[in-house]
Length: 258
Length: 258
DNA sequence: CGCGATTTTGAAAGATCTCAACATCTGTGG
DNA sequence: CCACAGATGTTGAGATCTTTCAAAATCGCG
Image 1 (cartoon, rainbow over the protein chains, first blue to last red):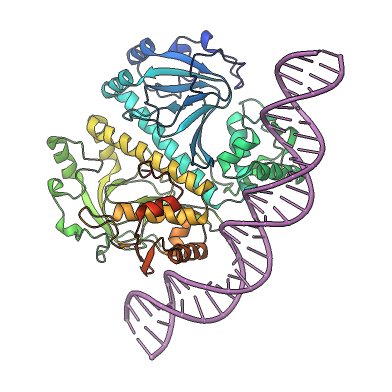
Image 2: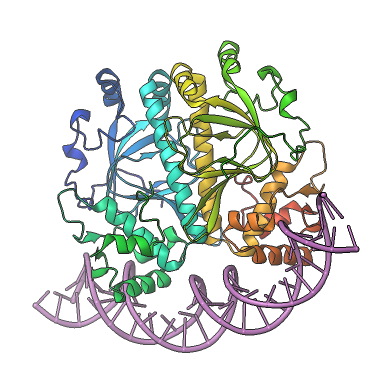
């Protein structure tokens, strides 16, 4: 069950169309401008380039087990992964979604505090932890960007706490759909274009603190109310994004949370 | 309503017995070994020492308003503060508790993303943001410790997401009491010694994603079941901590979740 | 002592979950 | 190409948990 062998990726569901074998140079990397390496100077980048390597994971595959010794850290190049926390009796809570350019792993941490699983096919840009830590110590640009990303994640997780603690099931679903719609939106396409849900109903429930039945019912209710269109169970479109934002309980005047 | 003038602190409820006027030297600082400055060398510390200043806040006073321009960052020297997030209709969710040695503020962030309020009397060790940011850039020990603290906070907020999304009201209350009991426990005192709740029932509700009535009922239920003793509404003791941990739904084999 | 804030408790309403049945989709093997 | 099996998704009905609304008790303090 602990198979982490290098597996051939199934077709990339993230739309980038890139498989690991076709990526190589940092300068041509699709996440070059947002990942942990984004503030590195050319010479710093070449050091990173020399120690990095790619790995791919099929949908559903474990990437990190809780309690694992953390031998590597990595950036998500493409695909979607989920960070989860669970209780002994099986209740689980997804505590973060990892999208392209997000960072996995904790410099300075010996053991992984959470599970990470591939949701779609995932390609990672990996570094062994020790060399990476040494690099952090000597590369302020890297350390600075890592802090920045950690603080962003912290803000995002605090926003999610408001959702988990205080929002209704309908607001939770609307919030999630608005989140996925926003990050799926390709510049140049109309904002009402349909988008793909990478998560099953059960995963959505785990992310939102709901059961899968409640997720399904609330999606049906939003459709019945004309807030969303459901082309197939995984393909959604939003005729009026502001209306969805209102259903989500967000202040429409505020920029979309994080 | 935006009064942040320097106010005389009411008696310190945190038990340290120190008021800001009696603190001065970093070398004698009670949070010297855990705060953001804890890894600084003597010469680095003396730079910090020259630009720091103390401020105190009375219980209930706002420390930071959401949207404020962040002119300073600070370490909590004593007392308890709460980070909160709220919706337009008044629903609020406490997303973090700030205890002594915790850090307030975001280097690199122009505006505060959340409200922070003093719960008890609070003493802060403040720095203006700009000079502090310059110091980070030139002091790897400071930057490193800040990253470490941010990652710890991120882990803690992810643990809290499991509580908010998946735990029952009883488990939530048990978790909070276990958390406060643990951090209130003074080494040398018996673990069954009573401790003080710094939060009102309403604040506990806001932290746990419950109403204040549910908080009150679950505390009564835990008392009726002999899990806790309630000396006064704010003074609790726990005869068997492992039993409380079990009620909290935590794996008793695991170290108390951060 | 008396007032406002806090806390407790009760009863009913409401939201979500649980259990169950059925529908739909997808990939596989006949 | 179709039938089938397993995974995923939908819907219903009743149970359960938490909230809401209301009243009363208690605490802290001037």
